[in-house]
Amino acid sequence: MRYQLYYWSGIQGRGEFVRLALEDAGADYLDVARERGDDAIMPFLQGEQGGALPFAPPFLKAGRTVIAQTPAILLYLAPRLKLVPAGTPIQLHAHQLQLTIADLVAEVHDTHHPISSALYYEDQRVAAKRRAEDFRQHRLPKYLGYFEDVLVRSGGMHTLSRHSYVDLSLFQIMSGLDYAFPHAMRRLRRKLPQLCALAGKVAERPRIATYLASPRRLAFNEDGIFRHYPELDATR
Amino acid sequence: MRYQLYYWSGIQGRGEFVRLALEDAGADYLDVARERGDDAIMPFLQGEQGGALPFAPPFLKAGRTVIAQTPAILLYLAPRLKLVPAGTPIQLHAHQLQLTIADLVAEVHDTHHPISSALYYEDQRVAAKRRAEDFRQHRLPKYLGYFEDVLVRSGGMHTLSRHSYVDLSLFQIMSGLDYAFPHAMRRLRRKLPQLCALAGKVAERPRIATYLASPRRLAFNEDGIFRHYPELDATR
Image (cartoon, rainbow over all chains, first blue to last red; front, side, top):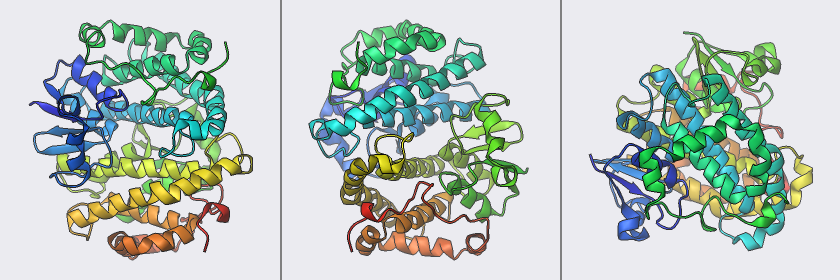
């Protein structure tokens, strides 16, 4: 099976959680818009293709099946890529964690776009500064503290009983947050020893290390979800 | 199996999507916090109970399995309650739609809390007015237009090939939006004939009609996700 991933070609964004799973598993996949341009995405969004109608990228084409929504894509892929242990309760547990990661990602997005995705950041800076401050003080410690607790509860090595796509996603979260909020993250890190250790271990996985060093890994940038605007980070 | 649903006792909120599925199926369930108070939720959030650690309510206890995140709860329940057709592609399709509903719900929440969930609405009214305007003009028509397209694509009677939990969730979305944004919804309705017809048909399902008329159905209120603040709705 050659998977076809459809996601905007210029950003890591939500597609990166899927890319990391495909890369870690050494799966055969085509990153369609990177090869053919973002226009390749549009016929799906406009209902000109068969299968489920996606609301937005990323979506995955697996044979004739079209799956949208990042956590749903990973729910489908993970057992096939051996990136989650067997069994319904543990796969539901993994999925619940991925859904909470998705919620965090949406809140990260809203730190720079608290009013409208249709407006530029510059047109919502005042609200962004307030929202980002709340995010750094309340939401970020709450989310990361939660994932730290999940790791402690499972014994610390992995989120689940062994390596899974959730570990890969938490690596991506920590990478993105370090890029967007370096000062805030420096303060938080001492309270997150398991999460920091996990992110380090994921980065050293051979296929992930190869991927991160390759041109396939896009750099974080200010068109994506994790954006570095110094005024939205903590001071010092 | 007697399911135990844990959700805040004073609001419909995200728990209502689960309640509607349980009620429509005539399932045996206990709405724990409605019976025992919201304190019954805390031991789970504080990690004092076994099973997966929830980040927030709602969560469902099914035997010893704890499942958090509304779409994950419905993913688990629906085949057991016969609220989704059999087969992986269609169940993924249903789940993808429910995830998009969850995204819409989060955006509805942020119309009245664009800055911080820790602040009162009154302390973020200026930003709320801007965000709500963007929501009414861009996001709401985009989301509802998408679900209308999904219904047209499937033949109009149901979101999937037959009745499913997604239809129940879309009923809840339409009900909540009619409550929160009556003027904006009045303008939009003419473009959403399938969605309006579906919501009407769901309300007439015998068990749903019984539930809606019972004291188990909480009223919409200004502590929940769908809140009616006239200044956030369209004029006239």
